Image 1 (cartoon, rainbow over the protein chains, first blue to last red):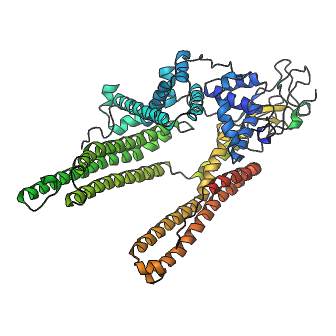
Image 2 (image 1 turned 90 degrees about the vertical axis):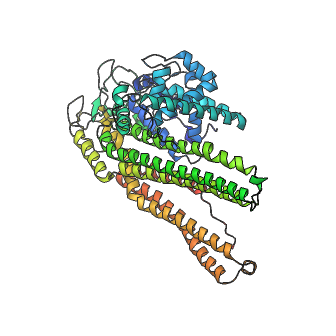
Image 3 (image 1 turned 135 degrees about the horizontal axis):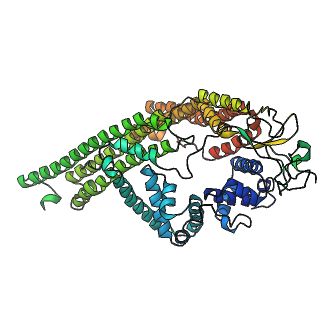
Length: 190
Length: 82
Length: 324
């Protein structure tokens, strides 16, 4: 995408890559002031730049900025200034995170579980954090990587993964329901 | 907890789960309008409007290492001269 | 032979009767099943409507507990939908396939079977449609809120809080005169020191609430837009029904009283089809006009945002070709 496009001009020296990677880190629980020191700005500067990026995305009818942001979000860990930042609570479960990035079935399982959790009235992001030590930001980053991957898949492969995910969603839905005394119509039979 | 839950109606259980769950990232806080520390961490001097935002006019400390552009609240003219 | 091509023999009649009663029994069971599910939907939705206000009252400013509560309600509706789909798949469809392989396509039994399957599927579809409608209605009822006083209250609270925000350097009042949507450097009028002003939860939520209020003030355009779209669809369906009654003569010559009637419907339909996108445009235009009234400093952004949105919804506009 054109480097000369004014839509990609940094705001207060904060580039789209800075903005995207910072958001990935914030979603992972890195505090905003840590992000700001790493970028060499104060919070009001960061917020003014953030607002500017949000407005550009809203004003861009062709979704160029937002799709580029998606790609850059997935590259947060390679960012020269922000890549190394970890939340105070620690890096989370590195083993599970690696498995999430390398094992598509594991990713689809957690994806299904997360949907099932929300449908059961649980906070899905929290559930994954509590049970697998994977933060929301890390999960989203891996999701972006798998979505890139999906462009090169055959439709059979995609269907296979979608079905796998849905099977897991149902499995977890049953488990979450059982933990809370069942569904409202479990005893209604044909 | 699960035994107790059985005595509740379905809706009561559904509500209890929604209300008692911890939210990812914690509860949203209700902060009031206020001011934060803006003085120089190095020498304690305040930042006067005419001195710009990026550097301390007294000791040269860099508050901001990037170059400010024209945003909404912050403008190019807010760059310190030194 | 029997089953495949029922004739007039006593034995054949007997078999046909058994077959019919099997289908009837299954259909009755489906009706009973749907009625029982409906009772649960009643419990679910009335409970949701009753309890939602207290969930909201205790909630944080992002409404996260209510979000979980309503997700759970939707999850239960989804669960019942899946139960119904499973019944169709495991109880209705296998019976259809068991018999359909053995009947000849012209037989009376086959047409009975086909209509039965069709009826069962339609009952399920209608039930689902009804469920979706009821869930939407309950959600709307629970979430209905007049944003006029909410917005006013937020602004008042914000201005009130600003009154006691003073300069860190000299203690003079900062005399905040604008809504800051996020933190900003504010210069003290007395000593020229720049303070970092934090607008607090109210200031930070104002833009979002203004959007809700602007949508509320523009809703009548959206309602009218949807009404026109439905009108267009209904006129098209009426035309289609009439077209089926045309004689070959009328069809070929494109004339006759029925044809005239169709033409009349078509002109109304075209009017509705033209008005629908205009109303959608008015809806969005009005939202941004209202937003600018509420938050004048964002006017330039509102204009650009509107143009970008407009480019997108206009991209999906299409017109029917009726070819009369």
